[in-house]
Length: 169
Image (tube, rainbow, N blue to C red; front, side, top):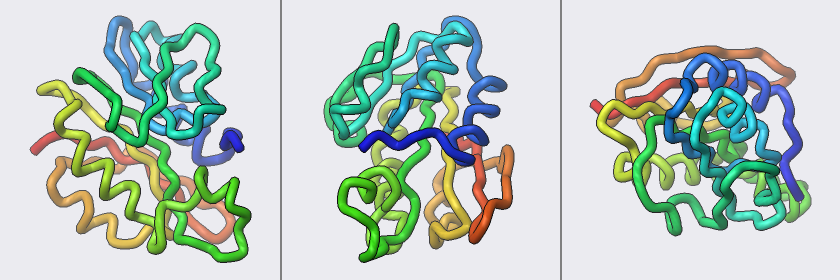
């Protein structure tokens, strides 16, 4: 299953349009439908779109890579975009959609794993655009090793979505 763009995708896309500049080297982690990768490419960036789901790697005119987070990623980037699976596990959810929506038992495990690896792939003045939800626990603690700035938020039924800009401290 490929995660189809929804409120979270469009909220993040607005920030991608603001941040991406001509010639930037951009990594779209967990590309899903490819909406962020395509947007960055349209802004003139050199883009690498990465996903664990091979179905997601058919994005026209964008270089793609099959990888579990940074496992197969080489190099560093000016901007890393991540709209991760961020919801807590729900036993009623079908297995095929869990890959796109569930961030682990608590919902933050994939984000934690990403943040432990991301600094090795971020250029000196590089930035991260990270989306998460009010349902994702402990984000204030999880983000403590980064300079953070809330860029946008949107209230949707049952939760609030946030896009944060992160950089190395």
